[in-house]
Image (cartoon, rainbow, N blue to C red; front, side, top):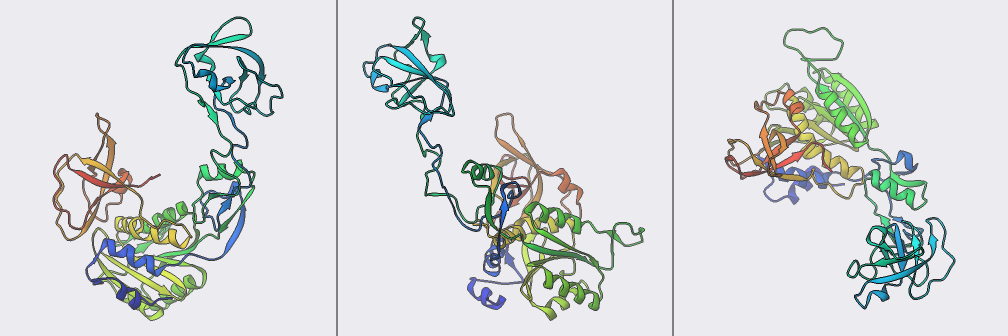
Length: 422
């Protein structure tokens, strides 16, 4: 396990007091490691879990050549003349069992979608392309289709003996359905990541406490809880911890004893009371960063015991931004996911001019919509103060203005990180 100093030495131009946002993800990729323990779960409980090993298909899907359409199956070689083709219907093939007859030249079989293709037949003409040519015959107009049309091959989707899903795949609804299509009732996945989280500060009120002058209710803990719940983590809520060394030490030790990762909010900014930062230093190997970004400049990262520590700012919007941009990708890596990248970025045209100084990455709250021409457009929510949590409710994504980027003019294309991505 590398120390923070060893990781820092691997990064060119590393400066903890002026760290570009891109360097944060690079640092965290070296800091965190996937959990190793695995478990078996039923498919009904597999959604959102991460595969711990490749799933090799025990069968081919589909298991036989079959029809992709309701229509008539025949030997497509008869289309070679290019003329209209008349075929006598000699039977019907239904899905779920093989048709046992034989089909000769000038003959066809009525066939249902998913039915096994009878031997010697390789083409299906959709029913709507044909016209009746007597009681038991059909006519296919010239040029209606080509040989091999509307035939699905055995193993076209998945071939027996080959990987169907790869280790590190986060199982979505389609992947769960795919497992079921292979007849596999269970999957081997990495265990859930255990994450402890708490808020710090004497000015923080827990829900149920009466208001008092200079104090604010704790929103960060519930924001972090929601973000972690969406990742499928096991949650350890340690509440609000006052700025007292003994209480902070107890909270950090309890978190480190139970969790793979610890997330705190507050107490990492320059000029704040030093109790939280001092306790982090006392108990672990921790770096304190000033990231070239807005909002969310201060951040602490490191380890306390075997737990990875993420010390986030105290401002509510900064907590969400730093989590989405940095903590979420790191946690996904710890969960065993192959991909650690932040959510994919879309391109949208700005509906307004945005002031921006080069030298920092800015994450502005944005509202993305569809323009009349079908392209994406985006506007800000207005006030971009890091304490304006209501703006995050109005927004459906973050406008990402790059480190070296300057002012944005109306109509310029800019990057957007959507809150609800694919």
